[in-house]
Image (cartoon, rainbow, N blue to C red):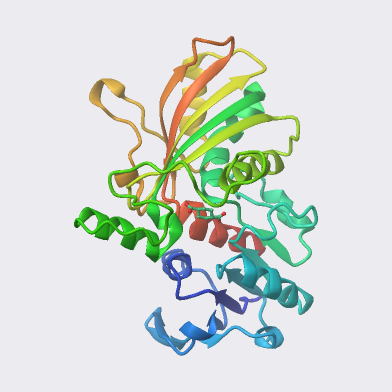
Length: 329
Ligand code: L14
């Protein structure tokens, strides 16, 4: 683009939406005009951005009649289902944070450190992957390129911020002794809930199947064997993941660690003797993917275990979407 784009943020008042604004501001994202949109119930709110007040407009079918170039969407799957195609038909490039379009074969699913070239075949919608998938593939991409992944076992420990303000409220109230469960099927304080999103016919949750299918799409390898268990834990921010990987080819552990330390978007925190490894609280508010506990899986020929942590609202959602938008400039 040879000029500054006109930008829209759709779902601007939500947890991810407000983080879009924070990240755009921090990264000094260039734009000519900025439009903030949300559902009827949030319309009229006033949000401050770079010292200027913006009134949140109601999202409607005519919202994209204005000359908007790029729209960052985080307004939920059903709003994306309806409004992303309308925007795209009017020449907008939508970067959509919902799960609505991710597995559509005509929609690229992009993590800038992993498959930036996929944006070239977009037809007006680019999907931002699931938070748990993003941090996993940032860590796995350099390993897949070098050693060839054969099988992955994901086990996740996911923060309540993934459910937005109501998840945070369930944990906050629960810690204060008020055992509510509005966001989840059970109280989250003092619990680990092995259910994120709805159950499917095969006994997996939708979150687990998202991790499996999205990883294959982003790494462009449908033959990858993957299984997953996703769990909600009483943590406010950052998803943690235990990732077990089996490779086609042998590796030298020290070289594999060096590869991770040098990989884009990755920070190696691996000094077990000093109790140094990634932690949810240190990853919160950051944009990198933190990797540690790197060790051989001694039960197979060429396997490792990793502990991978990232801020699910930043790298897992807002930052990744803004990075995609930067590729469009
Ligand atoms: O697919 O931690 O984008 O609750 C984002 C939040 C999946 C669940 C998605 C969470 C959702 C996730």
